[in-house]
Length: 296
Image 1 (spheres, helix red, strand yellow):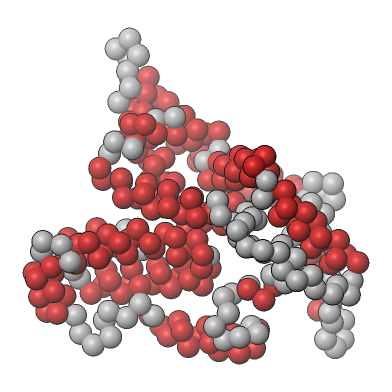
Image 2 (cartoon, rainbow, N blue to C red):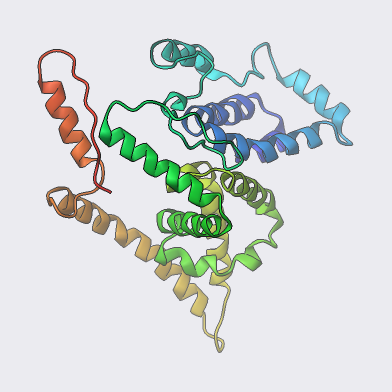
């Protein structure tokens, strides 16, 4: 979706609008609706400015000449019909967002919202879990808690998307921000990051819609790093190649580490216990309902 915007502005091709832009919007709406909406805001604003700017007449002629009925749809492959079909079975309301029905605990999603009416919990584990979530919500609403949560969001996002190997190119961010080619990408990332600050709870995968923005910033940082010379020597070129090589070498290391952790009861990753419980429930006759707490 982010890459489709400059293509649409330059060429006004139907395949860029449908196959890239509309499909990207549909994927974001299905996976991360709120964060995807935040990313789409600056893109939609850029499209509107371009369409109603100085060349709006030419733009209208090009779109009319290149489009056909249904080509401007933002619902490729019947995404809306599929969502309504799934919502009929799993959602309380056909217009509810994916996963919306699970947020029934005391603490709301956004910081400015008032606490929800406390539901009745029929299991001690579920009650303790959601009460802990509510205490965390109350802490984040304080100034100190908000600052701690912001630092936690930055740290977790850095650990998942950047890591030590790409930290050096990130230090060249002041030079990267001067590049006009990715300035609008940075704007989309800033809007999404600001919107995520309004949410009380955060996981690093929530920032998945701006993965492309983070990668673009890293690549531009590496490009600037390559040009750095120390005492006439291409030191930056060596550091840039080293960062890329470390990332490549870390792939088999991570695979071996995850394989070893999955076999160890002490350091196994999250989700393994849940998968084992699910396998045992599926092996039992009839339909089963299970609930439990996973290790943190």
